[in-house]
Amino acid sequence: MFIGRERELAALNKLYESDKFEFVVIYGRRRVGKTALISRFIDDKDAIYFMGVESNAKQNLENFSKSILNYHTGMESETSFLSFQAALEYVFKLSEKERIILAIDEYPYVARSSKSLASTIQLLIDQYKETSKLMLILCGSSMSYMEDHVLAYKAPLYGRRTAQMKILPFDFAETCRYFQNFTSEEKAYVYGIVGGTPQYLLQMSDELSIADNIKNTFLNPNSALYEEPENLLKQEVREPALYNAIITAIATGASRMSEISGKVGESTNTCSAYVKNLISLGIIEKETPYGEKTSRKVIYSISDNMFRFWYRFVPENNSIIARGAADTAYRRIEPYLSDYMGKVFEEICKQYLWRLMLSGGCPVEFSSLGRWWGNDPKEKRQVEIDIIAEQDKNTALFGECKWTNEKVDLGVLEKLVKRSELFTYKNVHYYIFTKTGFTKGCVERAKEMGNVTPVRYEDIVGI
Image 1: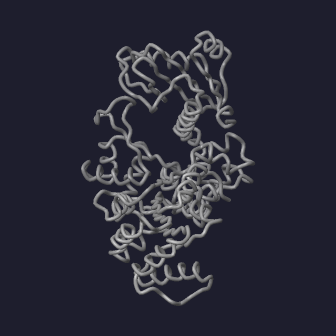
Image 2: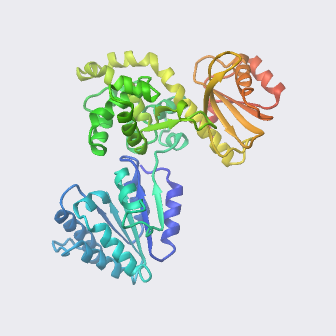
Image 3: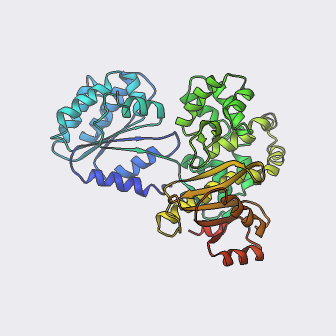
């Protein structure tokens, strides 16, 4: 099932229609749907598709040759080009007469096996770009390799690409399109459990309850997701054990570098280097209070929901899961699920505000939004604001998100107003997001104020 990616497909089709040489770099984490995107794009076009394998140069050249000759002759052939340069030059010459797409998927596997491949592609691009109608696509899952050896300034191919696409997981709205039979609340839980990565979403069934989905995937030793985070780390990093320890520390409450270091038992310098790599992989995110850049307040959290759920609940229940006691493991997890969803709901609300702002429906035209935490001098304690977004020095938006079964009362609104007064904005708009609803007192006060928008979760899913 292919859904979404309309923007990416539109961009690729626009490049295709230029009818001149184009070189597109597509990269993103494994399982995010890069191959599915390329397959959909080339489906009705003249294209040579080749996927690299983790083997030697000879094997990859033979496979590449078969892909080219099958396209040109329509027949399987055992003939092989003598070199990658000869094979690529053949394609460049073919494309002088007709528009052809050459998509090399898992490019890092091929390039690692043939060290001169990048320089060869550079040479041929420079030689044929003025006369060729080739649309060249290089795609890769190894984020570090694509960024360091294809996109970086010192890379041989730097300056040759005409476009690049970093393919990200789906947002919440796109994720909802996968499931017709889930309730609105179940859709939020699915997003919180596996995030927006297409391959993980396919593991979830909207014919089952959330509890049964969790049992069938994360709590099942035979499922595709049971060892997924560890397997992904093994493919991306050299020392997965320490990376595992760092992610586990963050998942179980360590948010500052000193706390992470203490839990892991390594120096802050060592942990810092590893955390930096996890950030580049899109697994960990670094946060500072909105509007501040001081490093003293930096905190770290897990940005990928599947990793966050797995590391929060699977390792501590591993012994039970391994014995096949999925029901017992789930009973231990269930009491913490609502609390776990708090951060997920904040992210869903932020995405809602972005869509609202981009469609012209938000009273504050912000360019960024985030979370804020710091000291309240009146209360003499640390306080937090779930969402804050600035339009200019005078205008801002403040938001509070509540994923609870109780209706949001007037006290929640009053607390948000009080905390917003820690700032000096003159024009302020408030958003209160709730899973369940609002008390009569809260609704009436919001109407009186005139600058408050109460939003129920059902309204977010309905967009």
